Image 1: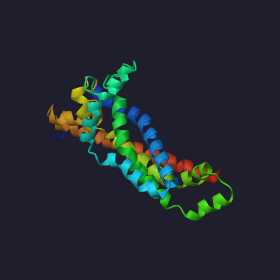
Image 2: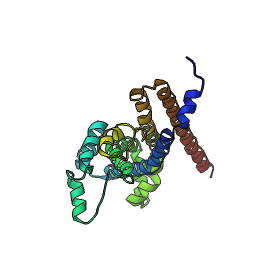
Image 3: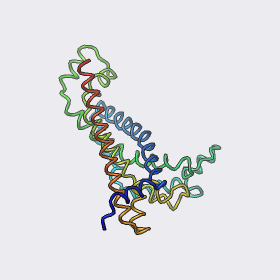
Image 4: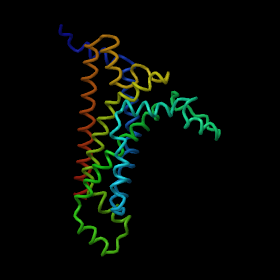
Length: 247
């Protein structure tokens, strides 16, 4: 039966669902810049490194991306749980009473897992863009006396801007789809509820509460937010690029 917009209204009135949106937006505002910065730094370092070790380190940094999100969350969950985690035990031994799964830390513990998983993938995208830069530009810069830092800042970074935009958009979409990590860590942390992220809220509405209509409305709202943020970011970046060229 056609219910009009009542399912959407019900979804928007759900405090857990809207709180989940706020949570993933905060997550993305911190985690995405950190991850892209790490990926960029690694890409620049490997691009400038000796060819002898580049393949080894490129593979090593990329390997976490090959680990499924569920498995990665289980591995890191072991490192987060007090009593069995060597990481927590080491922190306690130096007087740092940390609870990685507590209310104030669990979101950033999830951010750590996502950063560990996807930094290598983003690094490879940036390296591919760096390899497309003509070598003549580097040679001309070196002849002019440019240092390695100046080459990276004034030549490499501007030329990999499209790849940076691409990885940021993909990361933004991935952040809104956050599901596996909080789902796996939920039994380990009382701070993660059934609506911790929008994706988790829609899943629980569909398969726990058997409210498929509400879950479908929440999924549509999630897709709309992802589209709006992605196109808004692309428009903002495009406008800044035009302003920079005109300036």
